[in-house]
Length: 229
Length: 359
Image (cartoon, rainbow over all chains, first blue to last red):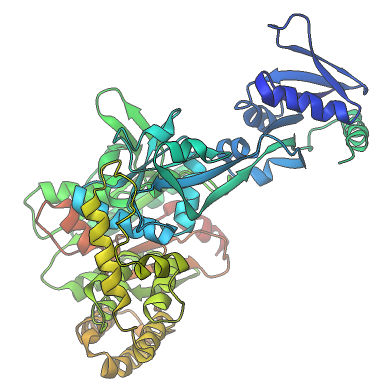
């Protein structure tokens, strides 16, 4: 049996169901609407597992599910050296969102990461602490800023309403997911010109195959040919 | 194996004690505040952080240097030598096959009276500890690059920016190329400075960074745009220092040549010469000792003078068997106004045992 992990609620679930449905594989919730059990029609040997999108990376890496649909941003955030642990089978063309760095629009002097670095140095000298960047994507932001030579900042954990942290003076800048940038603008923020960390979208991943059975391998081939990926 | 490593650690401690070091210990769980202040977010990628209900963020010690420096700065002892042994913990975010904990035995010398002599003592003692093993030594001197940057004929702002990124070679290079006019300023910068008053249409200020701070930076950018590029000659001299890669006596001769055009490095070059003399006096064969101008620039940024490492000659994948260097600036930052010139090194007893098995 191949276990396919799919986000258990909301638009991501509906769009995933539609994406598979368009390709002749029908995924649906079985039983009542509140139950997290699923059924698969159109192919044998695939079992639907409904999970929180944030848990799918971990379950894939642990081998408890063999396939999973989740945002590519979540895979990068939750799995160190993700390329060696999971494989992207197909980008699915929805759930698109950019992980970006944004600063106040009032900072007319800051348009690039180099500007951010210089502003951070001056900020630290003046205020006595490192410039705070609010985010929940710690790993990706830290790696991105390190690779781009930005120093003198600190990450502040923010699990929600991140765009409001600057106005509330708990951070000076943010790193967050945005699709249209509207919420950012409404909160007086702008995206740095070279501040795109990752363009994320819903993606079908598979875990490492080294412990797979022959039957699982055959099922994956069949599924891939049905899906045309 | 564990027993062999413990025996090797004991041998190293005895050796360092023989050089007058006092055997000290350090906590495994340290307050994260100091390390975060020193290294910023990068430490989270390299060390294990956890939280204490009362003490706030704590870190499993990633090295002994910081706690030993703190201990020394709190004591009034001066000069002093210390040795210690224990595990250090490093988070591995890229390569799960690399060890997360390793044994280190260290030797630290806090003594400002004779820096060249202290450098030589630490290097020669570590070299003696590894005598007979198939290792090669690499050395460098961050102080020479610092002196060269400090002596550039350009604005203090530019020098400070270069100095701040001395330990980030790629960013340092990008800055140097920009200050030298080799790369043009970003289009957004040009557009900003083309405005008579860039603040005229600025959005209302939100957050702690004030309008005045933005204006201050714009003024600084205008001043920088009006600053002449660092000359090609000076750029070439920095490049020459960074690309030094020869035996120590040849490097000394090259540095004397460079110093003719860049006399500000005279002091640092004299210190290098004095160190070579002190090393020779300790029986180190400096003619065979290699020196790299860029060595030590990618480590955690506390070495600011002499730096060295010992590597397995036949195994390029083995981490360095021993590393060390001078960290005067660190003692100043941790010493609340007091600074003590300090130099030290650590040996990995597990790697010594592994290498000895190969001999």
